[in-house]
Image 1 (cartoon, rainbow over the protein chains, first blue to last red):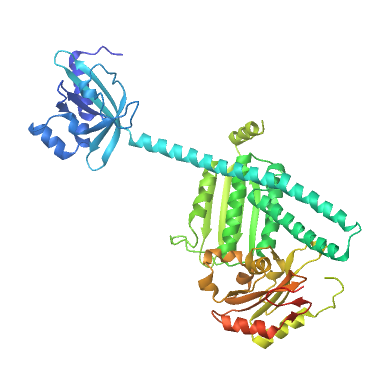
Image 2 (image 1 turned 45 degrees about the vertical axis):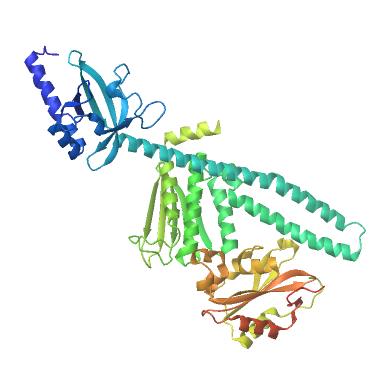
Amino acid sequence: MIQMTDGHLNDLLKKMYANSMEAIFFIDEQGSVVAMNPAAENILDIDVIERMQSGVDESFCQACKGYTDEKDQISCSKCYLDYPKGDFSSFQVYLKTRGEGVVPYAASYHTIDEERGIRVLMLLDLTKQQKTQEMLQRSNLLKYVIKAQEDERKRISRELHDSVAQELLSSLVDLRVVKYMEVGEDVLKKLQQTEVSLTRLLDDIRHLSVELRPASLDDLGLEAAFRSHFKWIEKNYGLLVDFSAELSAARYGSEIETVVYRVCQEAVLNALKYAGTDEVHVRLCEEDGVLQLTVKDDGIGFNMNENEAKGTGLGLYGMRERAELVGGQFMLYSAIGGGTKVELRIPCSEDNERERETDTR
Amino acid sequence: MKNQPNYQYQAEIEKLRDRFQFDFVSLALVQPAEDRFVLTWQYASGNMNDRYKRIVLHSGKGIAGIVFKTGKPMLIQNVNTDIESRDLFNYPIIVAEQLKSLGAIPLWEAARVQGVLLVGYRAENRLTQAAFDQFQEGLGKEFGAFHAGEVGQL
């Protein structure tokens, strides 16, 4: 480091004062603004600056809305301006700004001239950092909500499958045994009807369980889960799903498998609802370490530039969000009369592999 | 369902379609134990494709499912106004056959609904309440092996 002369240092400090992105205020003991740099002038409301410069009201208080303390987000108790004993080396302050309303700033406030009681207040715009934090929080929250939903579905599905359906099955077996005992004709007839109802009920419960979340997704993987789901779609809606899988029973992290399953489910349901066709092509494969899902139909398609959604418009949003949760890419192609194609690409990098290992542990 | 004479249901529903000038008539019947007693569309007349054959009906779902569960006739005079378009996919037979006005009645056997008879048009408001009543009256109390009355008799 070169030895700094006083002159040189003065020069640098002046430049810093003039060009810094940080807003710098010099404030005296009364809380009046003695001086502020250009960055600071850019922040404050013009009215406030005028009042300060004309000497009508020099108090910094008119620009400040309060700061964050242990109790409140925005508070004025023990104001940093007249509480010199407090530690204000780093805190968050809310200022009335020019054109952007009340904005949070990271601030530091300390005395630099003991004799004349001059303090310096330096501010750094926090909005960008806060936005990043908000996004992170939102994505975490979404992840949590989706996971909670899946977990709850899994629990109810298991419960239905393992206890309700089992119990029902054993009573059905009992009922069939009774049929071979010595009973009257009319009892037998009634028994037969009950058997029909119970059988149907058992099927309904099994369907409900699979519909909530197929156990095969956790036990056997994507391919098996898809095959039974598409069979169910065909039976329920008469929609033919042409499914080709080139995964050779490979398994992925449960988070990835869930995303692929749900996105595909939604895409096929969309085709069923809006494409006006009775055939959908689904392809699942892995190429160059990227898990790919393609759902394609030759239906009526839609105008992608039009914002008018036929449904709630939340389906596409949800698919994209789910894809982003596992670092995947979601793409949609459609044109009127040209069918619709949905593509999902999820890199199964080492990161995801590691996640899988910790998942299974 | 044992020992019943072999009714010519295909011929029966074609006759119905001719008599009332329906665009579409179909008949769903409960299947035997081997097929776990599911309800499927067995016969159709005036169908545009064979999609109806793939559909397995669920109690309480879709037209036939609701009729099956409630045991009451059901009339949808105008599909475009009576069913929300985003709900329409839950009625695959309406979508597949592009029906716009339709009705369905339960078919009884031994106080149980054993089948559903569906009639419809591909134009809005063709099947009015009066026309539906007239059809049920014209059909009479019997259809094949079943009772077609409002409430099943033992």
